[in-house]
Each structure stands twice: as C-alpha cells, then as structure tokens.
Length: 77
Image (tube, rainbow, N blue to C red):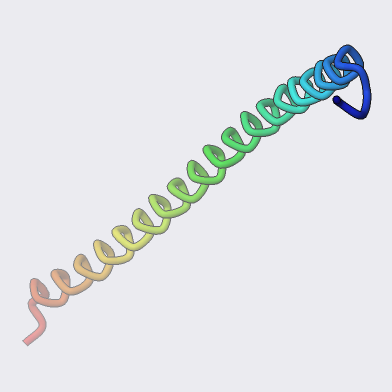
C-alpha cells in the first residue's frame, strides 16, 4: 500500500523540474561561452604585454651595444 501523491502528479512535478534544469543549462552554457571569450581576451592581452616588454628590452640592449661599439671604435687614445 502506497501512501502519498498519485503517480501522475509526481511525473508532472518531475517534468517541471526537468524543464527548469534545461532552462538553467541554456543560461549556464551562455555564461560559460562568455567566460571562455573573456579568458581568451585576457590571455591575448597578457601575451601582447609580454611581447611589448621583450621588444622594449631588445631595443634597450641594442642601444647599449651600439654605444659600446662607438666607444671601442673611437680614435681617442
């Protein structure tokens, strides 16, 4: 002997829960896709910053080496 709600009501309640989960999954996927895009943009900006810093360091080293070559090549006794 079962005590409680008829099975039709339980199935209807479960269908409502399933619809709610599907709706949440759609929003979760949309948020996840947005999060991935933000992560790609952040990584791209970080990589661009690293490349810029390396370029500035290379420029500074070249300038310093040119100064050293000018001193070595000078005809000052």
